[in-house]
Amino acid sequence: MSRFSMVARVDDEREVAEAEDWIARFREEFTSVSQVGCGCCVRAWLIEGPRELADKVPAALSASTDWDRD
Image (cartoon, rainbow, N blue to C red; front, side):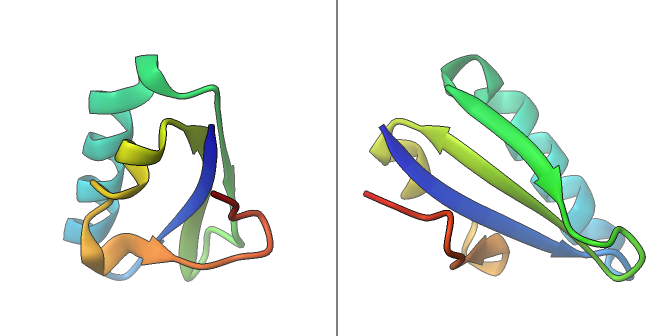
């Protein structure tokens, strides 16, 4: 399993919607997913799942955090 992160700017409704849609599409394949971030300016997700899912994260939402691991 791989761990990876996503982030969406709250002031960009398209980013938030794209992130939520992506998570809903692949939720069954995740080992875990948790939402972090302040929520007032960013929403971020820490995700654990198959490596190939990390490669499918939309480029605009991809993030790098201490959580990430291959």
